[in-house]
Image 1: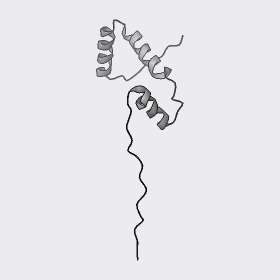
Image 2: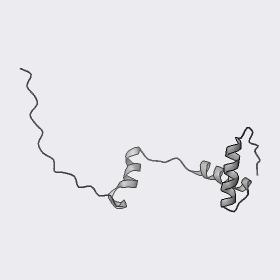
Image 3: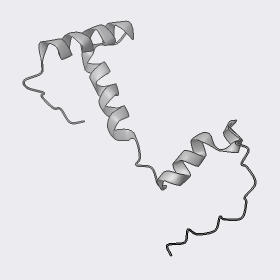
Image 4: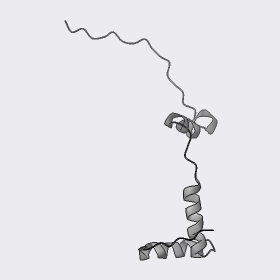
Length: 80
């Protein structure tokens, strides 16, 4: 396993990490490992924006919008 050193960490960030670790019953080192693992472990999404939106808001996920019927287009304006 590799080791890293993080320099110039703000005192506020260190304090919040310590509090978060204590709240989760872990050491600061283990909490930092889990945060890093979660952050870099995510795979980039393999879809375009439309497919991502559909996966979150499509009819399968409880959002079903009723679309109004289509009507014929209006006559274009005359510039006479």
